[in-house]
Structure formats: C-alpha cells, structure tokens
Length: 213
Image (cartoon, rainbow, N blue to C red; front, side, top):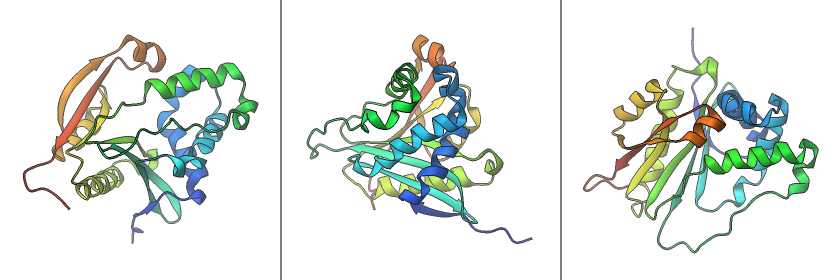
C-alpha cells in the first residue's frame, strides 16, 4: 500500500483551525487542569493567538501535512543583537471575552510560565506537536530537521535550543540523535502545581566550526 508523503509548509491562515486542534491534542494535559476549559474552548483560544502569529517578530512556524490533514507542527523563535526591542504582542482582549476573565487569567499565567526568555544568538524550538495517530512515523524528525535547516541558514545564531519534560525520554532520545545535549535540569514547584511537570531539561545544540547555510 502506498503511503502519501508528508510535506512541510509555512504557516498560513487556512491552517489556524487544524493547528489549534492539534495543539489541544498535544497539550491538553497541561492546560485543561489549569483552565478547566473544554477542548473546543482551548482550540478557539489557540486559534485567536495563531491569527495574530504573523505579527510576531523573529519567529516562524512549519506545518506537516499528509493527505490534506495537519499531522504536526513546530515553531521557532530567535533573537539577534541587531534586532530592536519589540513590545509584547497580544490579541485584543475583546476577542477572548466569551471565555470568562478567570479562565483567561489562568491561561495567560500558563502561557507566560511556558515562555522561554531568549538570549542574543539563540534560536529556540517551541510547540512541537505531532498528532497521536501519526507518532512514531517520522513526523517529529522531519519537523526537527526543518528547524535545523532554518537555524543553519542564520549564521548569526550560534545555538539551537529547546525544553523537554524529564518524563519524555522518547523525545529526549530523538534530540540526542540530532546532537542536542542537556545543558541544565530545571526543577520547578510552580510548574508542578500548574502543569504536573516537576523537571525540565534545557537542551542545546551549538554551532560547529564551519557549520553554516
């Protein structure tokens, strides 16, 4: 039986809804205990955020598509010395008013706690998500290779980094195969209380001598 190829495409408005649903599939265990939102409510919140994604500076998202279905996604964020300081962008609160102020406050706190503060010269991988029915089929590796290529095309960025849960050994093994190494292990009571995750590993791949586009 022929298996349709997986293609990687840049984020477009037409993918906002399916990517939002995929993010819920991947991260509901973190956000639902915190916000008490349903799948549809969380997906709608993520969709609003993704609608404003093109306005976010120094970032890029890839979408893995098979047979017209979104099966994976990954985003990159980076910081260079040449960039001027940008104000934090957030969609107008009016777009979220149907969800309730308390739910929104908890969602905002959760998103803030999961936001990594970039160093100059750092390219950071975030929101790695693969649909449960497509895990173990090479989607994650394809997305990670895209991230590596994008990073290598930016020689002003000397390291590629990410966080992985201390419980997610499968993902950690993939990252180690791609030459990422654990730089620090972070233990957080706040993360434990909010997301039931106590330990995170901060993994980094440094640019090798002569490695460029």
